[in-house]
Structure formats: C-alpha cells, structure tokens
Length: 425
Image (tube, rainbow, N blue to C red; front, side, top):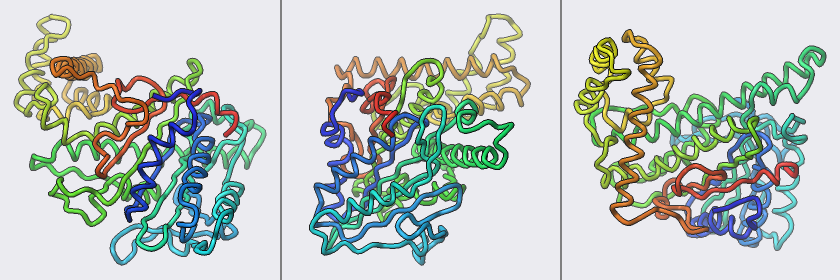
C-alpha cells in the first residue's frame, strides 16, 4: 500500500509502468487521477507523467494537451484555441482541431517542455484547500512511434463542496468573479457526478450480463464521459463484446487521491473511495460472479422473499410493511447491492414505506453480502491482501486497473494517503 511517505518509484511501478508496456506493444492506455480538491492529484500526476516520458524518450511521435471545463475545450498547446468534441466517422468522440505537435526527431527535452507549457496555461484559482486548485480537467496525450499505441494522462479537477467554494472569494462582494467560481464548481461537480454514474452503471451492466435486462450507460451525458468512454468501456475498442477471452486493447489505471485531515475532509474521502470501490468491483465483476454464491447472487424471487421476511422493530405493522414492500423489490441480488441509498429510499417511499424501512433494507443486505464474502475468503484461506505494486488484479490482461489512495477498501485496491503533498499541487 502507499502512504504519504511512499516514494514515487513504487507508485510508478504499480500504476504507470504496466501502462507504458501496453502502449509500447501498440495498445491505448489511460491514467486517471481523481480526488477532492487539495488531495495532491496534480502533484502526483505531473511527476508520474515526467517519469513515463523519461522511460519512452525517443519513442514519442507527438504530443497534445487540452483542458475541459463543462463542454468547453481549450487547446493548451495552441494559444487556448477553442475546440469542440464531435463524433468521428467511426462513432468515436474526439476533440476536433486539436494541435498535434510533432516530436519525432526529439532526442530529449522537447516533450517535457510541451507538457510544462500546457501545465502553465491550465486554469487555476485559490480555494480554501489549495492555493492553486485546478479549475478544469486536463488531458495530456502522447502518441508513440511506429506500431506503438497512445498514452493519455487525465488530471481531473477536484470535487468541491460549498465550503470549498467560500474559499474562492467573498460571494457578497466579488460579483462577477464569484459567479464564475460558482459556475466552475457546478460544472466540475456535474461532470464528476456523470463520471461516477457511468462507473456505477458499468457495474450494473456487468451484473446483468447473463440476464435479459438492458443497462444503458449514459456516456453522452457530458463531454468528460464521452472522452473517457474508451477508458471505462474497453470493449468499445473493436473487441468482441461477448467474448471475454479476448484481451481488451485498452488498459486504464484509476488513481483515487484522499486527503484525510479531520472532519472537513471526511465527506470528500468517503466520496473518493466510493469511486474507487465501483472501479474495483466493475473490473472484478465477471470473476466475482463466477465464484461467489452469497446474497449478491440471489435471483429476484429470492430477494423478494428475503424482504418479505424482514421484521424491522418486530411489530406487526413493521412485518406487514416489509411484506408489502417486497413487491417493489423485483431485483436480483447484484442489482440491489449496487443501488444507491437514495434510490432505495425513493422505491420504498413511493410504495408507502418510510426512510427507516429503506435504511433497514439497504444496510442489512449490504452487511449480509460483506459477511458472506468475508466467510468465503476465510474458507478459501485467502485474505486478498495485495502486495505493494501489484494492484492491477483482473485488469492485467486489459480492462480497468485501479489504484486507490486512502483506506477502507479491504485490499481490493492499492491504498495511499497523499495529504502531505497537497500544498505542492
């Protein structure tokens, strides 16, 4: 696992080195840095990119870089030229008109210079958590020579709360600047929310793979998810959707940054770990489904019978309520376990129940699944503790890899706390 005291080399070995190897072999790879504002994303991302460039110096064909704010795209290597995200002839979303700087004859230095230039042009502003907070999502694209592939580094803007916003400016006095900061915050949080929903529904799609239910993943909801679709949906890259034995041509590393520093950081930390959890579970979905036989594997009939048998506080009224609520839980165990608490609330309240009933169903089922998995691991004699630098699990042969900074995911991903670096971002 990784802490604030871990060196860059060990993090690079786990998160980026496998991507470099994949790109050299002709594959497309993406490294995504996510986390709340002030958690050290840009600090880590900048150094990981520099190390990767050092490893592939002389093999890079071209460099591109742009920033994304809402649906607005600006070229960071061409005087902030405003661009658009459109579909190409193959149906893939691309940034049209992006400057592609040729570095074929570079023997060292030019690639680093271009990346540094893009970094200087990127939009930043002071926040309560970070004096140089990134105000946009930044994409850096390295294309390799010959039959090499493409490396994309994505440094996402940090998720923000209202309290973080108050650190930008005095809302009552700063007028236009305050309005701009509010707009930025909404755009950042909205696009990150769309990203999280796509990750969650990718898991739902994997969960319903053997059923007749169609799960739509709304990639077109924002420019961010449109551009990240190849990284989140590897089967988009010309691979057979139905043949899982074929390795994906795309590999993704997801670095989730946390900055545990007291109660004010707790909400952001929990949110970040939620992203990481869904990335981990989505990449492991097929493997877990094949070997796991607990509540998560229940049919919709079994879920209904379970809800029908709940007693709540033991009163006749509560028993009757759960019996009636079972009618709105025609879901498989896989579908129920990935459902948001808010969605369970809506379903229960619409059927005449109360939030306390929804909470009992939600918490009880998730606790049952967690306990069943714990027993399954103990029975198999495996604690699933990953050694440092071996974080890619089911993504070794393509698909979604995951690196999480923080704690609380029980060894399903690499963990780290990068709060000591936040002041350097």
